[in-house]
Length: 102
Image 1 (tube, rainbow, N blue to C red):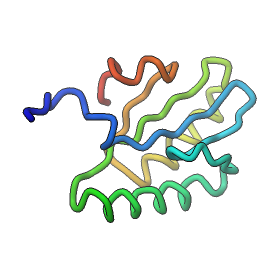
Image 2: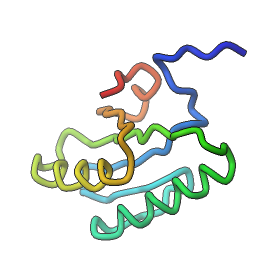
Image 3: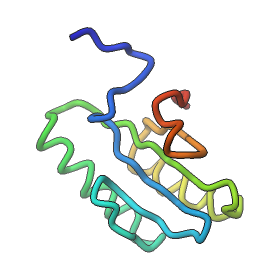
Image 4: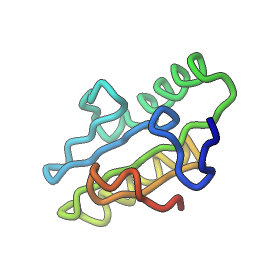
C-alpha cells in the first residue's frame, strides 16, 4: 500500500496523554506514569516499537488537555522531545488523524 507521507499510520505512533487532572498515560496500554518517569517509559515503548517495526522511527503523539497548566505542558513536552524528534501535538485524541506534524 502507498502511504501518505504527511500522515503517519496509527501503527507508527506512540501516544502520550496528559488529561485535565495532569494524569499522564504512555503507550497503548494506557499505563499511568509519573512525570519523572515519562522519559524512561517512553524509551521502553520506543524500544518495543523498534523490536516490532525495525528501524522505522515512531511519531510521538502528545495529546494534552487544554486545562493543563502551560508550565506542566512544557515539562512534559521537553521530556518527550529528549526521547524523539518526531512529535505531533493534538488537543483531543479524536484529532490525532488530522493533526499537523511539528
